[in-house]
Length: 341
Image 1 (cartoon, rainbow, N blue to C red):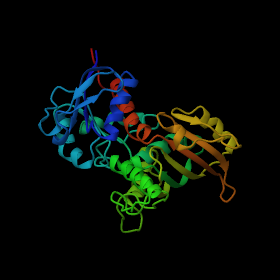
Image 2 (tube, one colour):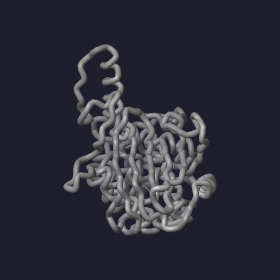
Image 3 (cartoon, rainbow, N blue to C red):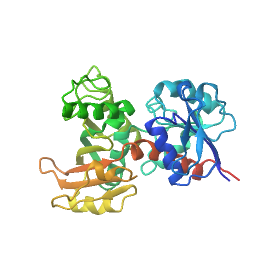
Image 4 (cartoon, helix red, strand yellow):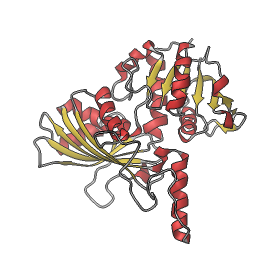
């Protein structure tokens, strides 16, 4: 017996990927509804590659009563307007936006990292999905933290334009084409030209000079992994369509060698270690696209601090950073909390 599942924001990049992942992983579904704004009402969208078409319904008029799980992929404004309504109707919400992530009554879950925290969902019937950059990083950090206790993390991200939605992907494509044909370039989605460039600015600036994206990585890592860990992040947008990369430097309480870290990561859930010290012996975003793993490469010791390591981490941000993690949460919810049949 399956679940009655709703995907909110089904016509966006992440919503479509959620439908793909639900189909690929054969999530037990009795009934499926695709919701979006009034602009998309009546449109049809395919459920993965099953050939089954879903007619898009208007989220504003949808009654969540009797539905089991709602995957929200439509941003903070939609989550603010409808997530609590869905939860009050008895439908468990798994929200991909940032709106509920730091709510103390809402668990923030990465199934490979803190599955036990999901039991707290009953307070509001809402579970939060972390920021895409945080999700992939904590998957790589968790087994190392268990082994040697991480004291400090310094991370620089190289985040693809798909993290800014379809508009971001369109802007990179249009600007790249304009450069080749000699057309003028005018940034719209991003603050500077993104084609053949990098932009050290994601989300709004805070009073201390950091950006909200950087703040998210700090506070979410603490909530998911360990509040004692110190985190410093620099988040950069790069001209890559899909796939986030991270350069991560770690300082541990206990001694850990690069070889020990490689052995640990090789066996860690959700991690794929590709680490050969030769040309091409590492993973780049192109290889990660379409895969659910968090790839780790270039594991090496940092001689500038006691018990230090550096590593390279890559993942498909639309998958592990968003859609896949949400579906994995739904699977975990089904196993631990929701009983069918």
